[in-house]
Amino acid sequence: MAKSRRSTIEMDKKEFRKIGYQLIDDISNFIGSIDQKPVTPNEGPSQLQDLLGNTSLPENGRPAAELIAKTTDLLFNHSLLNGHPKFLGYITSSAAPIGALADLLASSVNPNVGAQILSPIATEIEKQTIKWLCDFIGVPSDYGGILVSGGNMANFTAFLAARTAKAPQNIKEDGIQNTSNKLTVYCSKTTHTWIEKAVILFGLGTKSVRWIPTDASNKMETKALDNTIKKDLENGYLPLMVVGTAGDVSTGVVDNLSDISAICKTYNLWFHIDGAYGAPAAIVPKLKHLFTGIKDADSIALDPHKWLYSPLEAGCTLVKNPQHLIDTFSSHPEYYNFSKSGQDKAQNFYEYGLQNSRGFRALKVWLALQQVGRSGYKKLISEDIELSEMLYDLADQHPELEAVSQNLSITTFRYVPLENIDHKEYLNTLNEAILNELQTGGEVFLSNAIVNGQYSLRACIVNFRTSKKDIEEIIEIIIGTGRKVHLKISQERA
Ligand SMILES: *Cc1c(COP(=O)(O)O)cnc(C)c1O
Image (cartoon, rainbow, N blue to C red; front, side, top):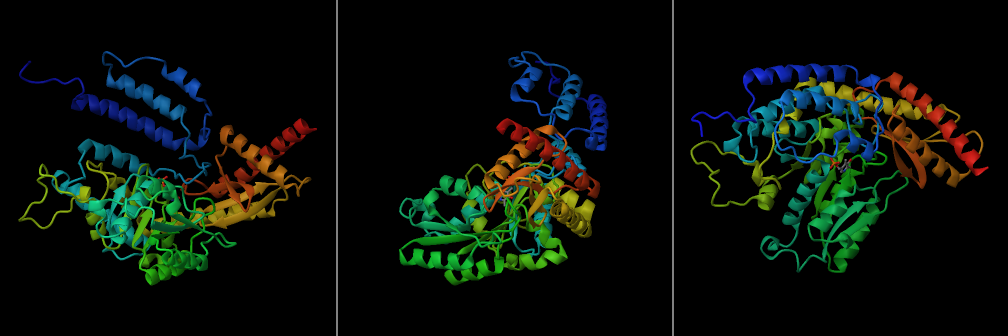
């Protein structure tokens, strides 16, 4: 082997610069013209497989410049663009451009944010990000926490902390086999599917979930919660935690957090808030009242990759007493030399969650929080809500639309043709067909919600690119599509 090494995977400064400049040029053009493109090219898997070609693992390497150029084209022209101003589906935000730069920077330095010694400045940036997120949603900054990949992981991390804190003390040594069919958790019917994954993965089983009914406004019925816990205690169950939802996935409703908190105090249960979508709305003054109970939470999940507009992936778990995370996740193998004496105490994030090696996902969140600031976020989130309210009002006023619900930045509504208005089954079928047409048409992307048994179109605005003009155009697109689909189905049935 030659004395000096020339690795094929290395890029010298000149080459990196040339490819990098070209890529940045292409990305800026992409961002600058994203509203001109279809939301989705609507290509099927086999079409895309043809595009990639059925080739096997390349034997020999190819020039990086050629690969990056080809791949740029592939991604720009064959992706669903959730950064498009008319993408209002599910809860996926437009990605803040500063996040793209942050990711490039983060992966260039590549700190391993599992241990402080491997990521000195990155660890402090993540700690500061956590503090700022606490401040953002209005809980004291002595909450601790960790950034994770998304809402599911954020909720899992909190769930495990709750289990350690509230299950019998010897759970770490004995496992849960003696108590598993006794441990119970409480949440409303609107709770996101993460809870089912959690009880399956972490050994409690799906029977441990007590699905508390919701009232007419879709909030957890706290009287029923209280009664269910009482009955379970009488029957020898071991209640662990209650999950309150702050912004449910379908309709954006926030549970009555103060009432849930009071019940948790009465029975000494862990109070977790799933605020993956809605927690950032606590920054909006006129919505403050919805979040009064947030300070009482033992843990909170929120998703910077939703309403903080961070690129995927970024979720966050906040815990009132972070020692619960350490009690749950810390272990000290002999091959780690991470506990240095002498310096002030270092925080090692591998002790705070499930991951060991960890990327620097805090950077994109930290930078966006500074680029926009508290007042900027207040404005962006308020505008998203205003646009959502506007969509509701326009649907309400239109003779062929029926407004169904509006909470936070989620609006649900239906297309109702001028005739046939009372035909419940037909309206469900029709709106489902309209949604399918919209999702493949490329003009606008919505999703669906079943509200009180009605199949509804659903728009969730976590999109800083959406404007009033988009909302007005979306109404036109839906009316056009609604008429077309209605005509087609009626002709097929005739
Ligand atoms: C989106 C969402 C989740 C899941 O989060 P991911 O980031 O998709 O893993 C959980 N709960 C609620 C309320 C959500 O809105």
